[in-house]
Image (tube, rainbow, N blue to C red):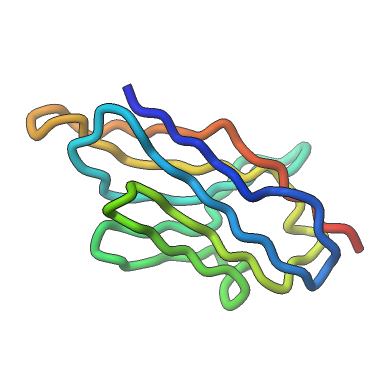
Length: 121
């Protein structure tokens, strides 16, 4: 089993910054893609940013230039630096990881419990 634990959410004024962290633990052989998703009230969960093991990244258009995703493969961790936050960034942010628990077991996707980010205007 694999657990993802997020931290770093909170309340911030528009224009401020927050840094989210997510650490994976448990039965881990390798982690390919890691990413951050968010879900605002009444909306579907959406991809915010993702990063694969080589370091290649992908961002939603709405956060491009404001958010930066990074990872520490040695710590099985992924981070999201969020700058110039806007009220529309308010949502629960979820960490996601594609994990192989052994070389012969197929990759499975795991989710964190979510962390609330609230941006006031």
